[in-house]
Length: 116
Image (cartoon, rainbow, N blue to C red):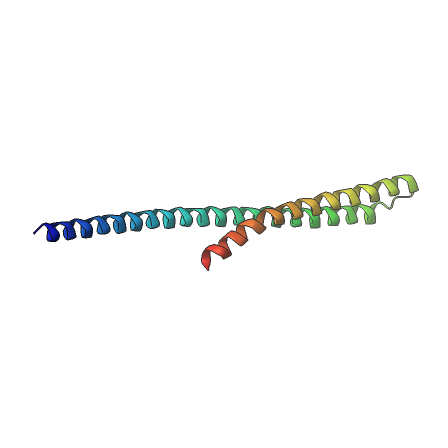
């Protein structure tokens, strides 16, 4: 009888350990799903920022072109300054796009790793 009671106790202990392990895995799954959801929201926001920046670039370029067509700049100094400002603005927009893309890369890698 003692052997049977010990065996039942061992089985109960193993079942309890198994159930605890299953609960831990379930908690990890819930945590990973929350991480994925957060990353997807971040990616969507980053893409929206990127789209806005690209739209601003187009609008700024079109606006400047319209001004230049309507009012040709005769002064070389002012024309040079305008070109420098346009170039600088373009570089800032490119840098912002790079920042957005850099921020997206780790999140995308995380999502791809989590899916596999």
